[in-house]
Image 1 (cartoon, rainbow, N blue to C red):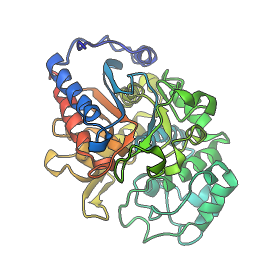
Image 2 (image 1 turned 45 degrees about the horizontal axis):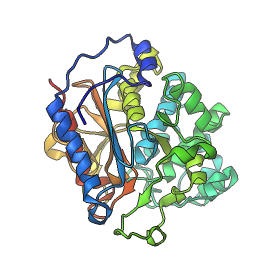
Image 3 (image 1 turned 135 degrees about the horizontal axis):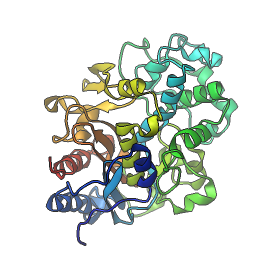
Length: 392
């Protein structure tokens, strides 16, 4: 299939708000072909060899999609579950509330959720949760209990700290995001999903299952390429595969819109959102707050495995190339130190680089076995190829 660049149907609103001109051809077709070949390789490998069932990728520049492609069972417009990059979507709603003064990162959670203050959690702030230093990473909340708000609040009350909050970094896969969602609801009086959709995604022209959403109703989830779990090894019998976290293989669970790992959309939708993070169209967010959320380093410490982590309030940061491992592996070697983004299960990737104005996203529906998870080498390799495709 020939390589071409083209605008995307989700780009018009962002471009209109930014006033940016149409991008010129600034990407190498031969290097885009290399990027596609790398993505195709994992489809061709097959599930039994650590490959993927379906995947898609997109590159955006000057608020337009300039390249997108699907592989295997995914087309470029096929919705897929967005794992941990979802956290950087819900952050966009928090920035609005920081901008109005209704919230501050230093606010203690108990100011908004009194039930949360038990079992050593009274000193935990929003910033600690956003930077994964709040010391309750392993506290449980799973499907179907998280559908019921009262059960969520009961879980918050019962959760215990696993150390001294604010003193160490440990990635919180899901627990912290549920607290942030409840804070949004407490302050706005609105469902956190509706608030995000109406105040962020819809103004950007992205509020659609085929672009970006924090889920959509169950009857629409039939369009989503369902995630599959091969993280403990491949089996041809779906009944023998390990169950997915939060029962994400079901349309009912996908419709819940879990705030830490439950968005549904396409790489193009994510890449366009990150263009908005670069350009702040229509001054949607307070500029100082947005810059701080992207670029002020708030965490520079090892995780529980000794890997150095560098994080702003809302993102992983690329930082210097020589130190890129742990959760920064997926930036590859060709992005600048100012790039920001997030990784996800199966090698999912999204980042934006202020040095070039490029944003990149890769999604797959397949959770792979070791050396997989968030640290699969494909994330680093795809990012390196994507960044190299830009003609500087």
